[in-house]
Image (cartoon, rainbow, N blue to C red; front, side, top):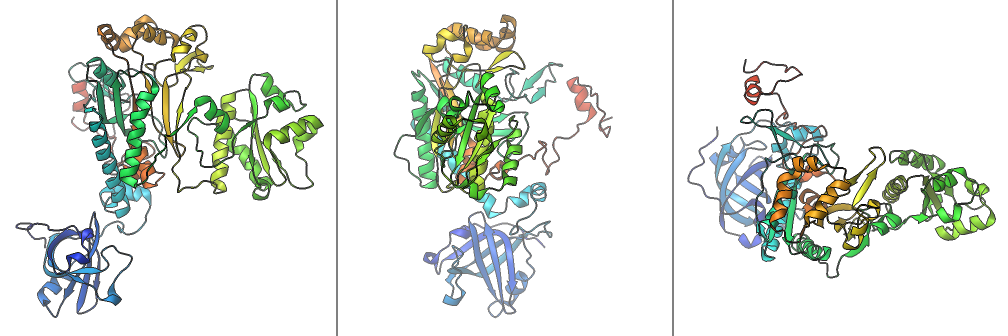
Length: 600
């Protein structure tokens, strides 16, 4: 039977006890992880979030206490009072931080009993089962350590930004829907029936309004919501370390603050120090060399443009792509010919189809063999291709041609990473950090016949590119920047438009009428009339930073209560049906019938 938890004060956490605490009387509290009854001696491994400590019970010293301890089962919640003593040399456990000592119990209280759990906290089990019983899953030291790291990241960020003069200011969850990007999560209004709030995809408009309000430097560890398809590093609700600052002259002003924050996080949380400035790559260089605007540069396999060398060859796949305004590009895998079978090369062709390419032209440079596409090239073209690729005997070459450069970059960039992982070319012990900047301001959609903002419609164009805003929007570069860590976009931002005329022109290039601008952003444009300081900002993905710092590739590991692939919560059953009474109060009538008529 559980006992009352009164008159007890914890003196120490389980995982903090060491030999220096020998002979100290302590009171420790936690969960029973393992019980071992050896007849006259009984041991319980007591666990809290700091670790384990072994508690010893001796029947010859206190038979009643021993018998009470014998009733304990795994995951019982216990309070133990006792004295720290050194273990004998043969009983020390070098694999446990507390393995040199144990607590000789003088008192035990069972404050909460536990039924047999659906899985053991010490075992690795199916993720779906773990998420259904997430409160048990979170007892696992591996997950607890990840949430501890997440907390450390948040505290370090707060301290750093406060010292840089930033104020922590909260912005609303219930706002106006301004569709531009992912789908909004909508919240119906009971007072104004037929109207909806939107949960924020980011605090973008609010933080810019705070600059107009004269707050000068703002930050927030902000919750954000996007109704989009999930993947390993994406959830419907996520967290950003969000900041904005006024009187920004250039991108470097914001990047300097952000880089300082990242260096501080690495130093304090991982004891990793960066003394040199992070590298800067232009968007164009990143795409040309790596086929990605978030390149992993811990390995080579850089892209090579073969378009000039094969423009006049007789291979239709190449010449057709170039004639249509596309390109022919390749990666060379040193000694790749020995690493890949023909079947594997064919599989690479299927791989790139997911990125829009029709396939891969593969060439294995083995002694005595000639790549099949060489028969379409003359001797001069063959020599030029070999020189461009720096190809040697034993290498493998993979080529993608398409009328769209985007398809070529996406396909070959993804294949580059796929092959590097397959051949274990990536040094996972390294942190590879760089800035990518000078992004295009716009992306053109041939399908929709219009331009979209590559980042968002409040991003400032480069001063020298303003002249192309109306005549040639595709030439306009943005004052935008992304920080990339190990091939992951860790954060990004931009200098914002603060001139009302430029902001209006931006909306017009995006195909928005004056009426649409007023309807979507009227309150924001109105604020520009009353004096707007130059400003810019950035947001780091808190979840992605926690993933990188803890070495996991699954975002669910660093979120206490995550959703699964269909955006549902296995533990609570959300989203779920609500009572019809609630819907009537909101003025909502469902087309789909609910399985129950709760509230009727």
